[in-house]
Image (cartoon, rainbow, N blue to C red; front, side, top):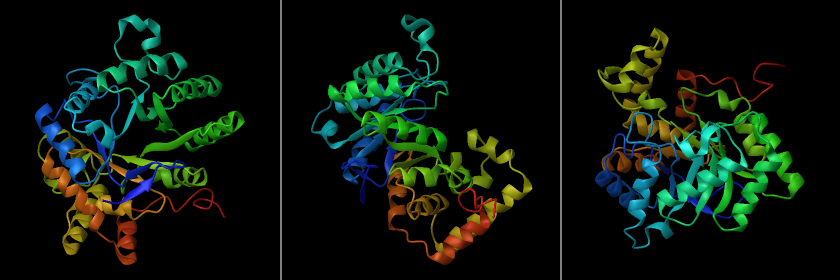
Length: 328
């Protein structure tokens, strides 16, 4: 396993993060426990979750955090070995919070949601506490004061964001500088071979600010995994059916290139991200131990400049960073 520092911090995290969104809705507790145990054996020390995981048609919001908590409760150093990240933003169907249970970011939500997450996770702290989405009405003085308070109490080590725009990262940096606060150390964002818009603004901004970029959906919901075009059932099949003829041609060309390389589509997609200097950590979301072990193989794949250029040809990006991507 390879390790890197998380953004501006001295904390070291694995180059692959274990995403847990499937725990509960698609993966049983027993298998989830096996995946987490195996992840530690493989050297993956960075686990990512969110307080809403387990909802949206699953057992209920907070369920995934409870799965992780039950796993921690087995002891044997499990909690101590994990760099744990969770998120808050969405409502949690908590009648006691009334109108404050809606989506958004505030000190009230941070305090209440953090306490609930710590209870679910059966721990007294999380290393990284992330805002799950930008709240366009956010008050940086309010939210950073709350973060600082929880950091002082040892309940949070670092602040992070997810699904922010480049301008929001800049606003946050300016606000944290005024407070002499470390600020956001990471941004979790959608980025993959099929979704390259972040190259315009988000990735350059994060790099300039010294923030790590954590990638969610590195396989674009399974479209960049093996046999995508032959899928006949499930959510992935719906995405395949919605593809244009050009999109189908892209995936076929990609499958052909991976076959030439002797590697699976999913491993090449992860290797592409790992080969990008401005990407810190792809988040993998295995449903089985076998999928986890396969994903780790991506760390051993070196993509030559020629292959990287072929991937750019199949999946063209926006042309670089702004404004040069579209201006002189």
